[in-house]
Image (tube, rainbow, N blue to C red; front, top):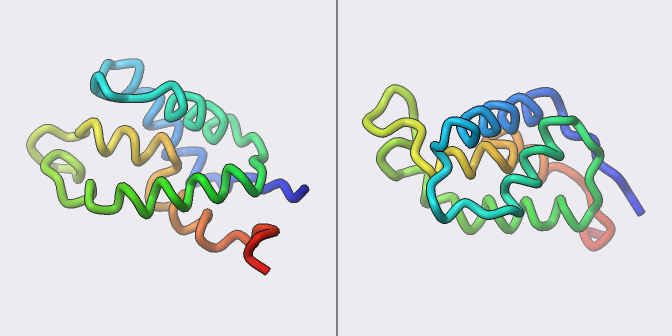
Length: 107
């Protein structure tokens, strides 16, 4: 099984999300999965092909959230719960990284 070590910018996005989570900015719908992913990426833990695939699915599903109020700084309501969740999964660097990684089912 292939493992993938998150680059520094992915780790930094997840660390930022953990700070926002600690401040209560994640919103009521924030999942344990998002929290676990943020912790994993923030530590720089290597992730499996399965996690890379889940990250791809997350970013694909939640791309429209980037248009919502509070997603970008400076802006009203920043960071929105959607932005907190986006960064928990590695943010824009995480999206680029997950989409660039080769996983077993890509071949």
